[in-house]
Length: 392
Ligand code: PMP
Ligand code: GLN
Image (cartoon, rainbow, N blue to C red):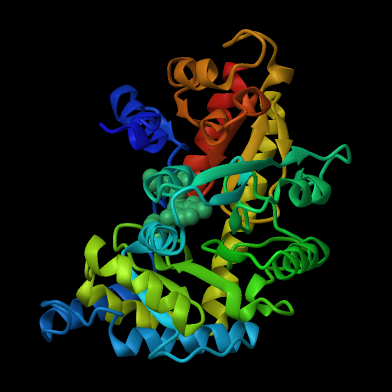
């Protein structure tokens, strides 16, 4: 393994899912739903397969039906207008969208600012592109309930002459933070002032709760043409195995990402692209029901975790809850070491979780935080909550 990748080892998601299989524990680690997405969307995929649509290489940018549906979705939800021919790119999941954007837009040595904790592929893709990551740490707010917040002064101070790009993620995995209008306004102003590109990972755009609202960064003044926005059918329609994601951006940025993409996968997910095109046209009632279902699950798991003694940072978005394990004392780890805790948790409680420390460069800043996924059936979450209550 070369020096660029040596530090990354095996992704924590694979490690923890393997531990779940090995121990028979309930897997609240890796974020994937245990219920598949809508029946009619699965039927649409079967129809595409049967009718021979997408069984051979689809067009490089994605099938026209899907590109049109993605553009229509951005217009309908956010009033953002994109040309399906020049401003939309279908990718092999959001994962490839992130990789293609970074590989295409970074010069070796360019600095990329990303919030820490960051989704693990960001660090690896920045490294593969020869860039340098500059983490800005999200910290628990003094105000209980405000979750993890960005320090805007720290963000501004992190920009140097070598900064090329801001890599944003809202709603944020793993903390569940949803950036506010004020925060996004400040980020947009900074990007314009320092002439930065922005890649914004908005795969949890439909999972925002309570008073929170998802505001795409591309809707802010000066941002449309400097922003690469990323979405995912895996997250929005609960088909993580289909690996259909997308980019919307100005023509030059889409064209750049396409240059990288054509040598990564070239194309992918032929028949599924047609099905996702139909999914994106589902009525608002689908998106509302999806959100309300996840909201009930959030509340169920949050209550269970709180009863068990965890400090719970109630997420405003995503399907993850970040907790602080320190109130549990030294039961499973000395001094709140989330790694040790997560390795011992399956045996003690029959539940698997993810140590947030893997998403930090400043590991000590993330040490006591542990993430639980709640995109699981109610009965599974009830059982997990019960096990955790008994274990602590
Ligand atoms: N970004 C974030 C923040 C994610 O949580 C995930 C998936 N868990 C991805 C990107 C990757 O999405 P996909 O499965 O569509 O590649
Ligand atoms: N995005 C999912 C999560 O955060 C996992 C994706 C993966 O396994 N790479 O849990």
